[in-house]
Length: 115
Image (cartoon, rainbow, N blue to C red; front, top):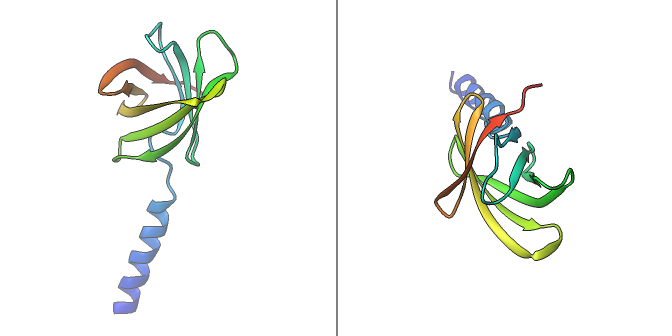
């Protein structure tokens, strides 16, 4: 009996450990913002591309880690000047809604891109 319970617990840990974070996906900003961010692409592997309004190519690349079940923190570098680093937090606030913060300041609300 103990072996069966242990096996079930291990299987549950493996299954839940492989699910993507709710922040994974493509997020769009509905309008202008102080950081000029138009799109945030959060990948399952801890990588993020941030697009600025003036370009179709990413302006920043980031690594991310989960803060909690709804929030990730990102450490980003500007691709034009990798010495410039900035941290953001993306907090999922609803099924297809999120907020992007920098230093406890709301940068923009985001909406998940539909497929």
